[in-house]
Image 1 (cartoon, one colour):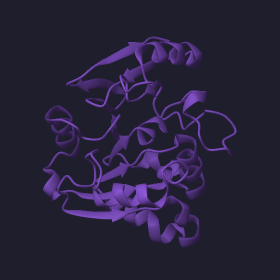
Image 2: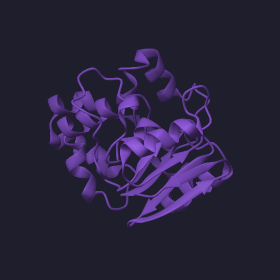
Image 3: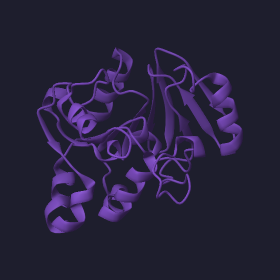
Length: 217
């Protein structure tokens, strides 16, 4: 897949330009599916509704898509692959909301979406916070809120971890990011809400109008 891993959505012109580049066409000509699943353990149904309807300050679903649908991962196992796989393959982009990355990881595996990802060569994945972190190898214990999570491991689609919302007081300070990176023990990035990480064919590019820091392995 083509990845745009954000902290807080498409927050500035640089990130928007990166999204259009990945799509290969205007947003207004692109069909999107939004995935609110990660929201439920932390934000609940009201947060899911705000994400889907664009009633948040985090630009994702309100960017002017040609079409927008909701892909709720917890429903997919009862629908059957013969129905939902075609919905995913027909979409230009998946907009994956924030919340708890371990809960999202669980349902990506349970639904079969995780297994489908390698075949989606032209699909763009736009993650917001947990929607970005779920593709990393580990998120760190401090970011685990779901009580049923066995540990902090996630899908490992990329080979680096992400510390989002850098600079958001009191928890997401640079000192906190440094401590987190030492515990993660692998390659990692701390990014603020004006920053995204673009990944195409294994090539990583930081797109930023804000602040970020790379922690080598």
